[in-house]
Length: 170
Length: 440
Image 1 (cartoon, chains in turn yellow, blue):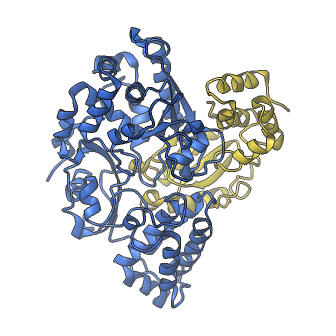
Image 2: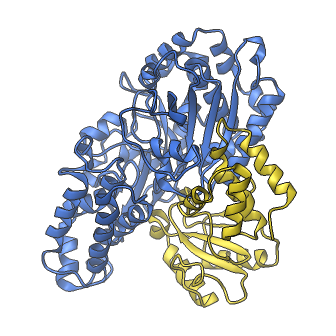
Image 3: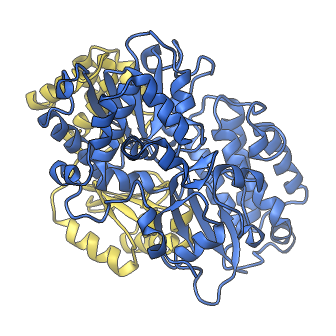
């Protein structure tokens, strides 16, 4: 596949916001990631480089620096489970263990280990999400969920499983 | 015992946060919205800078530097020049900027408009953390609504002043909250910090090497009220003359009502914990981290410390981002410290060797102590490695002596060093008995 005309146009629109087009690298990668089903194969990075007229190596360097760009296929919904201190003090480890058992996955930061067998979810441990007032917390796709309990997480994920993925589109 | 109700009338940034629909421009304008900016347009830029300096406002992002002084130091007569809002909130247990972005986006935009007019910038950026999808969309909504009302664009309100504001998304990198790394990221690259000098305000140091001012979004959110009511009004709040105003304290961990509380800088740590609902019944306070994960820890004996920039420094820590992490007596300090050092290891950008390699080793050693495999001599080894990453002494003493471009490396040493100073016996117990003193 390749980027749609609409996505290419969006990247051009974004690039025009900046004094230098190279500044649009991050937002352009988000546009490409949404087009490619939530991750960035090399061809997507090359296309972004072409649209911005920058070297592919630059785009590859940027994509590999930031954690929200996924370099291998992810499940339909990405679950970012906060494991930092405030969430840890409020029971995040219990949630992590529960989800590992429930889905038979490992939540260790590896996309492959954290993806459910049916491909519905990829669960990743993440650093502080800035929602510590509602710890423990997680993000599913782009939405925050706070004050989590095992029951609440089960209910949220059951509901979301059948819904379409929501991508961040800058 | 104080409650938040006692303090609500003193709020500045959160004054209208509870008003339904305040995230729409019409409602915002019915609640003093853009009056500060309109006042600014009637003033000379240098008078605005003097006013902000006289207010005593200090940066709410972490360093607590005088905003007015930062503006004065920006190199003059060089075009183009930029103002950048820092909404890349990532310091563990800090969550005030996300709330401001989602609930009061126009106030952030008004703040950056005032700063841009005062500093002669015609282009401004708000760098929003990648995870803050709602906040990013809210800020863009506010920007678009400002264009519709003629508050952004060419010849704003007939003043002859032009300004464009762009919201820019991050993509998951704590280091991009550090201002020079943020600028690298905004320039389209990997978020590597830069050597200072030149500082961002100077030619060569700012965005696209042009003079630039980077300002936390809570700092920006204070500007409209300072312009509306004047520096003298603002400078009376808090602990004048050097610690004025309110700040948003993000209280988390083992308190009954964690959340964001905007309070005058004259509040004490003990009062703040009470405002946040106090500890859970039957629990005792063990430790508090008063300014974000990288700051030296406090204990019960610090409950009377006033939570201003200078008072916290005097007491041996730093006010940082205004977050307050409360840990009660059920907490294993080794585990808590390990979790924070792991965070810094994960977020190290890899640029400087002491940080990249050193934090990795700190984690390995802390991990083995926590998991009952600690060895004799590990504590001395940790202390020595800490000194090699950050220079000797606490974080407070490391500015100028640390061995890395930015403070991420020294920040990662702080939780280990501080908790070991306060609770050395727990570390020793872990090593000697191969288990935890608190949780077995």
